[in-house]
Image (cartoon, rainbow, N blue to C red; front, side, top):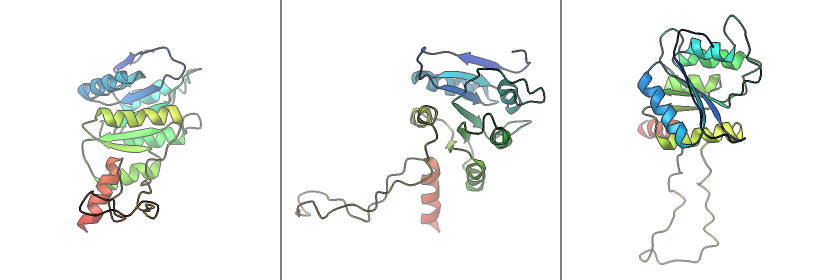
Length: 199
């Protein structure tokens, strides 16, 4: 592939279930962090430095030179990039008949709720607040392996069946009450819960 931008590929393991991730970030440091974290999980990573380069790689630029046999399981992109934002890239991917089903995850160092909502409404699978951690990347790999997993819904942990447990002396052991907060597994859910609690 001939382009003037930065494109790097890291190949790990030759498994048939290998997840191929297209990582898009204008920051070299952030690209390297994502590559290393994904390498820990034995993913194949193609890293590019802009939304335009991502479109070129996917064959969605003006040349429409689709690469036969190209398999991308997940796209993770920074939101704030010069030229084309991650939001613009998300829209282009979701408009494509070839790639619209690929999960797209947006990351940003700014935790702005309207931005997060806008990306999720446009079809982003998740929104990660930087710095990206290994736990974030582990969650991402599930998108690529198991197809689309809806992480936007809160797990239903509020209805606990306490009727089958024997009565206990409250002074001897802690008990779970129906008013215990639900387990939150996404930064978006934590943010929304925090914002709601402050209102």
